[in-house]
Structures are given as C-alpha cells and as structure tokens.
Length: 151
Image (cartoon, rainbow, N blue to C red; front, top):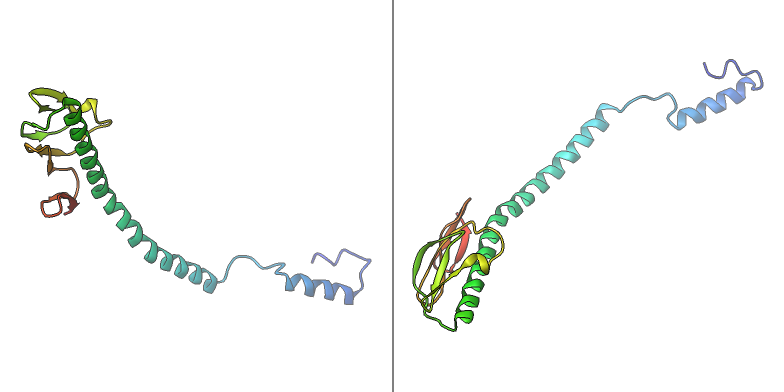
C-alpha cells in the first residue's frame, strides 16, 4: 500500500486519509456498465432528433439553389431588355450555360449578365419570362407557382 512506507502517520491518520481518497474516487478505474449505457442512450436520442432536421435542410438546399438561379437569370433578362431598350424578346428553348438571348433583334450573351455556372435549362417566351425545363437533382418545375420544387 501507498501509506505503509510512511512512518510519520499513525494507523488512525492513515485510515482517515484512505477514507478521504476513497471518497474522491482514488483507486477506481473506468466506468460502470450503467454509465456507459446511459451515455449511449443519450447519444442515440440526440442523433434521433438531429438527423431528420439536418436531412430537411439538405433536401431544401437544392430547391432553393434552383430558385435563386431562376431569379438571377430573370433579373439578367430584365437587365438585357433595359439595355436593349426593347421588350421584343425572341422566344427560345434550351437556354443553359453559355447561351445567349435575342432582344430587339440583337443577341446578348447571358454570361455577360450572370456570374457563375447555370446548372438548369430554361425556355424564354416573347415577354421575357423564363420557364424551367430541367435541373440536376431532385428538382422539378412547378407550372402553377412558376418556380422549382422538390420532386
């Protein structure tokens, strides 16, 4: 034992010190099974709550990204119409990355008005209104609300 080599303490003092050390957990090693099971249960409960919430955010990100792209493109078309001084838009299909649109008889590159890569494919009517045709991921066009939605 630790205290057998110490001559300055009497037996009563050694007993008191051992009792104090035992009270503070001296000599105990590891966790009990109940403590481990309790920790695993708490972690499982937290995972059961957090994982569905994170899944909702991840699923919503694709739809929001598609709708932001649509808004950005629609703003670019309106800017092109203002620059051209005309609302005479030539209808077109398959507008995608690297496309141009014709307004007032002149072609305008979308890349001059939109930063980044266009992921979706769009159609444009004579009024300059964009309609989505395809977008990567679980996103489909909603004709009723004129926006992308989760499929």
